[in-house]
Image 1 (spheres, rainbow, N blue to C red):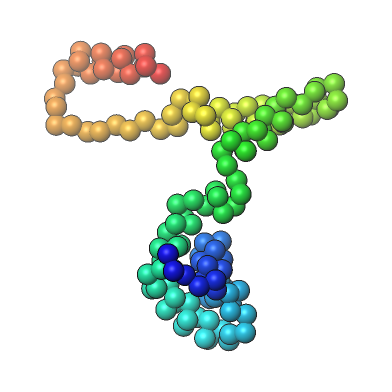
Image 2: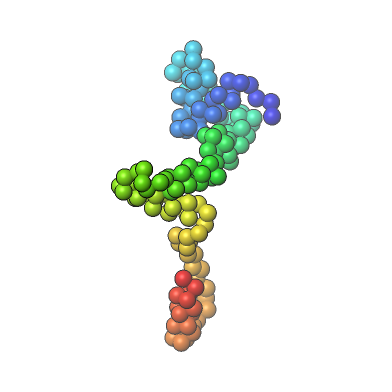
Amino acid sequence: MDIKREHIVFSEQYVIDWNATRAYQVAYPDCTDESAKASASRLLTDVNVSAYIDEIQKDLSKLAGVSALGNILELKKILTVDEAQEPKERAGDRIKALEVINKMLGFNAPDKTEVKKTDVTLTNEEREQMIKDLKDKL
């Protein structure tokens, strides 16, 4: 992808808060507010800039220097703190860390279950059996 350094700066600034004028002023510090507003709007229509912004959006964790594994390792440090060296008030931090790790790794039950409506008519017995089966799965 052929993209100028200023366009890279603009794109990386733009995804921070989606303020194109501010992002343009960071990339081109000598421009006026009016010029930044017009030029930023025009720059957002540039094919290469748009593609780079899409690339950044797909991998914001890379730009932020954050990864799921890194987060888990930091949470593990909180989780494995020696209780003798830390006050009991920190127990809440360890519980929260464990909850976050479990959620990140998918160990928890899903937060929501998708139910699709069909045009099938069920008898009361069939409906009750379906409810029982669903409860058994949870």
